Image 1 (cartoon, rainbow, N blue to C red):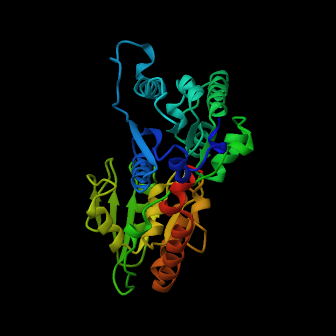
Image 2: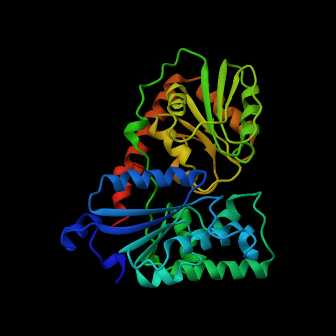
Image 3: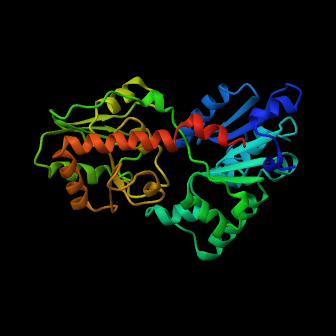
Length: 363
């Protein structure tokens, strides 16, 4: 049977004589995937009908010595092999959820035994389109990869794209039937990001959060800030090297649940992520939940998240002049920042509340 014909998670407990619905969660556990995993864990903790077993596959996860197999240094192959080894035969589960397709390559046998969901934030085709630094293989190799990924996605009971941009690729590029591609956006704990409105009578505080400073457009932000004719300060949260300065504070050791990170969101006036390439940007959703106007770029599914002119301002990637103009516009009008920030908060509550989106996964 398929998940689409099974009862929802909330009904499954009664359908199994009061026993929890056993689900194996096989999760990529790095960068933004960590945020998504923690969201799912919070959702599951609130649902007594679900008994979860978590398999967290990070860049350092290794179930075989690196010298045993020639593919062990390829992340996609080694991560999928690790997931397959850890899950085993999967008969102890009622269903599997895998995030992302990277972990599903070697999961054909478990997917034949139990209903399976593959969560996808962006397909390889999406990444080729959105990430200018992504290196493509020669066409024959790319075609083999496309067919392989397509066969895995089509084997799933259903595929769960995070956004319509990804959903179109799942159907058009990888042959998944439209009825088996069900878009469910990620979520955040919107109440945890509820902060008091900012006052507009002080130095403009800009916040940037991006693991890879250069790829997320950090250098473009610094150039734009230097061109501003207003008082400003900037907090940069990143995992990579970034230049600090008199008005630029760099934070390199903050994780998603760090109170200091929440404090930076609470103190900011505007969130800026002029990313050169992205699929969606969970930090953008957190900023919206925090009531911040967002300045970002028209890449990937970002335009599905940020409504240009209403919840923030979108510019083209790499356009420093347009980025500067967007910051000047927000710096000049505390009222506009308040208006956009409030609209961003409403949109986050309507579209990205984990209490709404999390339960949709089991329906």
